[in-house]
Image 1 (spheres, rainbow, N blue to C red):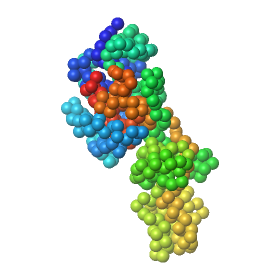
Image 2 (image 1 turned 60 degrees about the horizontal axis):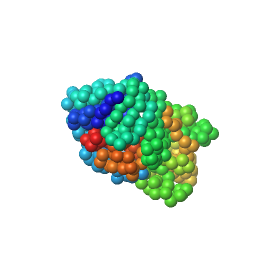
Image 3 (image 1 turned 180 degrees about the vertical axis):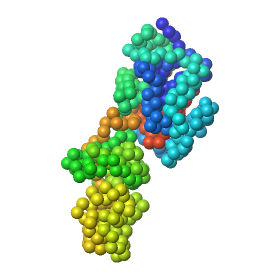
Image 4 (image 1 turned 90 degrees about the vertical axis):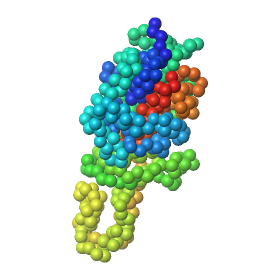
Length: 405
């Protein structure tokens, strides 16, 4: 029988941060993970270079049933705090699109850094190890694992969500939250490609691989119910690249909007966000003898212009009626589509939903009805935008919990 102050289950981003912080405070910490490879989600992130945070992180960059919950942790541990740790370890990094920060070299360096921080805190590693049972005791918790029993005063569950099961993601945290009586917000794939009906999408399959910048929204009117309309009103407008695939749409813009999209809801794409296309086409008609395919070819990849226009492509713009140009311009600026679903957890970057934040203390992440039990990271109902926000949530929630256990 091992007796410690803190057990952290899940050696991912949030779990290692929490264990390191608690250990360096002098707590006796055991860190458990079922995987044979450490922190696979960190390893594969950012194309292997780990988009470890974003320069600017605000609560509005996160989605939750309780949109105020994340504020305290995010303010207590900022991107600048994590950057300071990265710099202290001599990891070189660079800034990319819209404040996204990446390692110059490998994501392995972030894993190595976190492991070193745990070792400084004399964290005991148990990996690979499976937790079979968890029982509440008078003084804390008793865990039965593949290597024996552990008694602990505090238990932190940091096992992440169900996205990317191929690298070991499971519903462990959700299962045990339910067993301890905590409410779960329905888990859904987020930051995920959207799919469309095969017949509807057939004309666009030939565009697989084509990308362009677009404005993206979910429908703002005609909702099925008032609650959905309220959610849509809170959805930000994104301006990001969109990628055509054989089954639907992907790319950063689609991943962003997918977190807000609800089944039965349409999405709207502006395929020429810098132009009011009705006016632009009408004006072009009066001053040009170009083929309409060439006109759109100046804005779009050639394949998209040709496929979009079909038989209209070789016509000179002066030969096209104002009525047809108006309809074309409106569709370009407001292309409305009804997704049939998402590509699922296998293709999702994160899980939306999880442990209801109303069941947790926003500063310590302790369950209100189970003293000593904490949930952090992706298993909690806080989901960040694409661009380093979910890692910052892992660092911030792990730090806050590590300071309190």
